[in-house]
Length: 288
Image 1: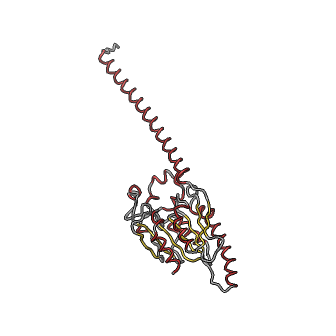
Image 2: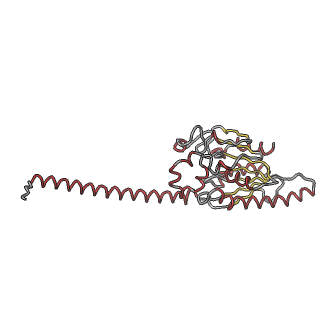
Image 3: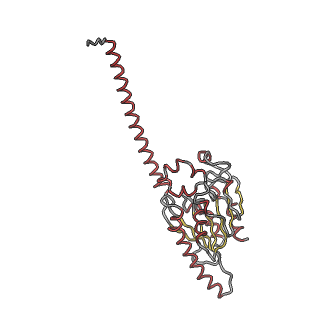
């Protein structure tokens, strides 16, 4: 059989081959760029985790040598650090309280592990110390001292877990600042699951579904006061949160049955920690 192939047919085949070859080159370049973007994103997330989100474990004491008033234990929330609570701690110390601040890393463990590693040992140490002090005070007919807590954000979940699992005879009052009492929609976002290694496994504990860890903690059976802000300085986060929020936590679900709640006006999730009104409310609650 004789095949008649014209020059025009050859030109068409050549053009199609070139177009296919060009498409292949374009796809190669696309995947190279995509691979580079993914590697760069992973590197950036790792650097953020290591240098911005990770803070070493440390305990800072105020008025430790002269305990004549109740002890207040304070600690931060997720990605938080000692300096965030310093204003409140210093004001409490000025008022005569012995303050123990716990700074702990929040990106490597779930809430239970963080509590057992970093929070429980310090609380247990202070309980033991206060027990000895109260024995001496009893011999002098002086009233017993108590241990109060002032905790921020995710730290409120650690404390609620600890107090659910442990009974403290010396427990005084508890202040929860901007608590994700029933979770936050930020934890529900699928992106949070994708980058779990970088933002920490504890984020999953704060989902809003009824079976999430935070929603199994129950309501407080101790004197509890909740302080929450009403402003957001993070429009991106606020896009994922239903209703009014403080940039991290929805106001509508911050409350707990049996706990009083007050909104500190014009404050965000973290700026509430540097507000004099916040300190005034804490001191008033501890003294009432």
